[in-house]
Amino acid sequence: MPKINWSILWGVLVTIIFFVLLAIRLEFFFKKTETVETLTEAITQKPSDTWMNIYQKNNKIGFVHRTFAIMDKGFHYNETTIMQINTMGVTQALHINTEGDLNPDMTVSSFNFDLNSSLFRFNVHGFVVKNKLILYIGTPGSQQKSEITLQAIPHMSGSIYDAAFHANQAKDTTSSFSIFDPATLGLRSIKVTRNADEIIPVIGKLILTQKYCADFMGAKNCAWLDKTGDILKETGIMGLSMEKVSPQKAQEGINRDDTIDFTEFASVPANIKIDEPSKLDEIRIRISGIRGLLLFLNGGRQNLYRDILTIKREHLSTAPLSGNNLPKEITKYLQASPLVQADDPQIKAQVTKIIRASDSSEQKTKKIVSWVYHNIKKEPVLSVPNAVEVLKNKVGDCNEHAVLVTALLRAAGIPAQIETGLVYLRGRFYYHAWNVAYLGNWVTADAVFNQLPADVTHIRLIRGEGSEQLDLIGVMGKIKLEILTTS
Image (cartoon, rainbow, N blue to C red; front, side):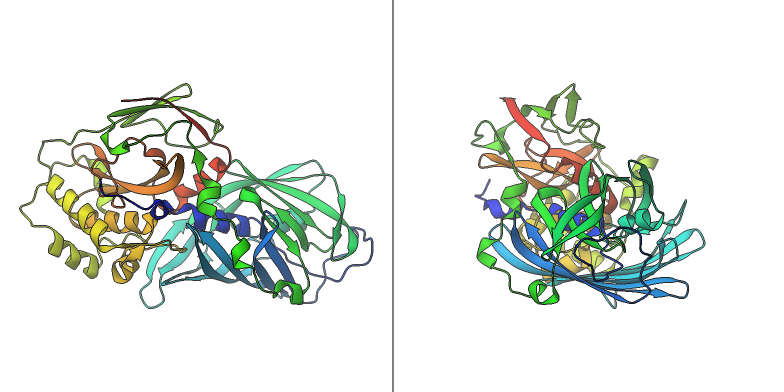
């Protein structure tokens, strides 16, 4: 295998980490506070204007500015988030704007989510009609419509603390809320517990606060709210935290040299060195720290028995495949989705340039994986990738590679999915994304390494697009790996 720089391994998790930290909270209802305040006054009717600094391990990496107003039929908010994110030694600017309307109970009525980063831009806007959430997803000018059937109208992923506050949740009680995350288009349930009140220092004053803690996919996030519902402080995973500050302090510069590399920070150390992972046929790993989490560790080439995970290298099937002899449950992985636009004319046109109609399924898969490996520049990108944009810009990390490979394979008639998990490189396991293609059975493929099948140090935690990847949040900082044997 050609020598690969370690930095190309970082994938989808950076985006998810920040979206979830910034999502499971809302700093609404800003009001000037006294030296020591009580929790008895009603919510202010005046428009609010809140600023918060974002920190990682006490290093400022950005700020949030939100305005919020009470309307005749609910609430209107506008939030701008600006961050400097260090991934793989490269610091990038990330600009997120979210605007929307909420119902009187803080559930979503309509919203617009816009993310700008490097070469990529992602936008999703939507609204609720009866029991459906109508979404328009993609980049401006080339958006696709999608619908999600709702069991109940969700809160935006940022409004759960306000929902708990607004509902006058009692101390030492736990409530469940349904939330929608615009970054992954996912619906999830989140539990919020109100703890004992605490007095904390905020901008040189002592404030009596209500403390709430949210359990999201096994990850804990806590927030301290004043008597009006304004969030004054928040702590979350990966050493991330936020604190209310003055507008002047929020807009002070960020020291790019002090930012922590999230790639290294999130990685998991290995107990032994593996010289040539691509030559291994099997690996056995003791895995711990993730009990109770919704992960896809067992199945296919992976076998989990108690806490021992065995991964075996796959063998390619010799049986010819076509759309006529695919199992019915597999054909759904030929379909396009909002971010994997397998039916887009640009994707289809590119496929005809890569493969021949007479190629076998294995040949088509090898050619597509190789083409993406050689033609997509391997650089870290902070965005929500979609296949058409990746094809256009021809740059990205493993997440962009995996999305494009999925679209090209499906357009070529090969069922394909995305897997996310960990992969070994130079003494550590890094978060990574790759593919599985159906070639008589599911076979791993990694366009970052040009591997078919992928080497056995690829540890699958999740299989699926978008919302499934939220399940990885609970893994961060908890998972531990011990390599037992390799062969």
